[in-house]
Structure formats: structure tokens, C-alpha cells
Amino acid sequence: MTTTPLSSHANNPWLAARNLLVVRLDNLGDVVMLGPALRAIKATTPDARITLLASPGGASAAQLLPEVDGTLIWRAVWQDVGGHIPFDAQRERELITLLAERHFDAALVFTSFSQTPHVPGYVCYLAGIPLRAGESKEFGGGVLTTELRGAPDELHQAERNLRLVEALGFVVADRSLAVALPMQVRAAVPNLLRHAGLEAAQPYILLHPGASCPARRYPADRYAQVAALLTKRGHQVVVTGVEKERPLIGTVLHAAPSAGALLDVTLPEYAALIEGAALVICNDTLPMHLADATRTPEVVLYSGTEWESQWQPRDTRALLLRRPTPCQPCYRFECPIGLPCLDIPPAEVADAAESLLAETQTATNAPLREMADSGTGGAR
Image (tube, rainbow, N blue to C red; front, side):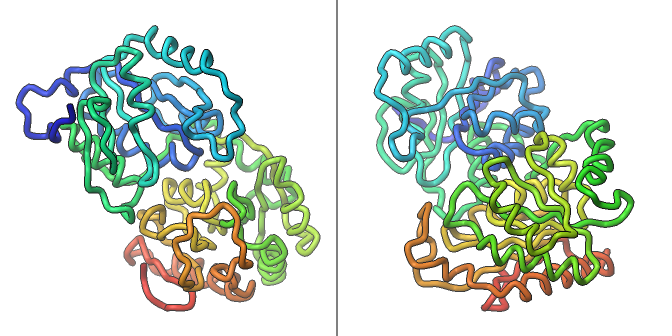
């Protein structure tokens, strides 16, 4: 049966556990936002070993989180959007065996507001893991030994993660995102910039036009105009992406030929590039979270797929640009009506970038976070 939160229990089995499984089977940004919760676990129980069960897409983020001692990679059928994983019951039994062989003492299942912890919780049950915790909206019987209820949908994802670990008795001293970057990775940034044709000693703006979800992408031709405006105004711009985003980058470079481009750098190198940037311009995607973790100012083209409160930067200076629409939040992967939430003129984006740059350079004692919603003028 489910139990109440354990924060007040004198004899807390979660704090006695030493071999912990942490489940987060989403994208890179979701794993990055797990950092504060993992930091709290390690700070409270430094002898505990944390193994992250992650998706193929999210696993590499463990490189940035020193609290992770080991990683298991699995493409979970319950995360299969679109039904692309073929029916194979034996394959799912192999996951149970894989987890059972590790003899975990406890499993923490981290989910977004729309996901259930009960399916992965049941896998952990069948693998013989005695303690299993998660946040849920629906009844799951005895699948979880600790089940939280009542988190509002609009709660920030990092706070949702922290809510779970706090309920289990782990002490949270720092709620902010952070990533660990080795010095040799930081030292590689000048060579990367030179490879892109930029002056390594001069400030640069990092522009990332991609996102895994088309409904979150500000149009590439508009990103191209933003890059052209910024380069004409004397700013160095480096455009980033992965190989499958080469067409987007090509569109931007065609309009802004003096901009540089970097594709498929390693994740630690990419985080270091973001850390070294004067400003990041991106969609609601991984660079937004990395900029928050490295305290790099950012302008985010934030579509209406989610509430800003669920994913927005919390610890860096940021401007979130979005047009108000009645369909927000739609939670769609593709927009059927032409992205009216991102109908923002490129000149407005370029002006916002320069304004934030100026504020960052002059207002050193100003509050770190300022959120503005394009079209409303209000903070979100």
C-alpha cells in the first residue's frame, strides 16, 4: 500500500539505503533538471551509490552530473511516443533481470506531470527493489511504497523532483541547476570557436534554432533574420545543432554568412560553449536549461506548448518571448495552425538580445532573474 511522506520519520529506510536506482527516461534537458535532486541525495547520504536509468537520448547528460555513479540505458516501451518499439515481451523481461542483478535497495521514479510512475514502479517491484517512490495522479495499489499526490501541473520540473526527495527525508540545501565541467573542456572552447571561423577572444552569441519537438521551434527563416541582424550590428554569432539539424543551420548561415557553425560537439563541450557565451538565443529545449545551469543570459523563443512555470530558467537573466494564445498549453508535438504563439518579428528578437546584453553588462547588482512575456510586457 502507499504511504505518507517520510520526512518526519525517525527511522527512515530511504536514508539507510546505499544502492539507489534513479529513473528518468526522458530527454537531455529533463536529466539536467534532475541535478538538484541528486545533489540533495548525495549531500544527505554521501555513502549512497546512485545509478541512473535513462533513455538513449538522455543518458549522456550524466556526464554533467557528478552525483551519478553509474548509468543504465534503456528505451522504455512506456515512453514510446507513436508506437515505434515492436512488441517483444521477452525484451521487457530482460529489463527486469537487468535491474534485479544490481540488487538495488531503493528506486526513485522521476516523472513529469503527465507521466505515470506506476509502470516503471512495477518493473522495479518485479526486480525485487523493496523501496519505490514516485509522484502520481492515479491509483496504483502497492506498486509504490511511497506515493506523493497533489503536485500542481504548473510546478517547475526541478521543483517537482525536489518535492519527491524532500518527502523521502533528503535535505535540500541548493535548489538551482548546476553542471560540472572539467577544465580541459573549458580549455577546448577557443579552438572550437576558431574552427567555426570566429575570433576566440571576442564575445559571442550562441544561437540554437533546433528543438526535438517541431511545435517548439521558432521558424528557421526567422532565426536566419535574427542572425543576419545581429551580425550586421557587429556581434559574433555561432549557430549550433546536431547533424539532423543541418538544414536549419544551413538556412541561418545562408542569411548570415559571417556567422559560424558548430555541429555535433560533445555534450560537455556544448555546455562549456554555452557557459562562455555572452548570450544564448534558443527555443524551449536543452540549451535553455544549460544556460540556466551555467548562469548565461538567454533569450528564449518559448512556444505555447507548455506553461512557462513548468520549465523556464530560474537562476539566470532571461527573457521569454511568446505571443499569448488561447490554446496554451497545447502539449502538442506539431502545431496545426502555424505557430501563432511564436509570431514574433526577428527585429524584436534581436532587440531583446541586445537589450539583455546591455542589462547584463551594466546591472551587475540587479536581480538575477527577469522574465518577460512578449506581447504582454509582464513577468511570468
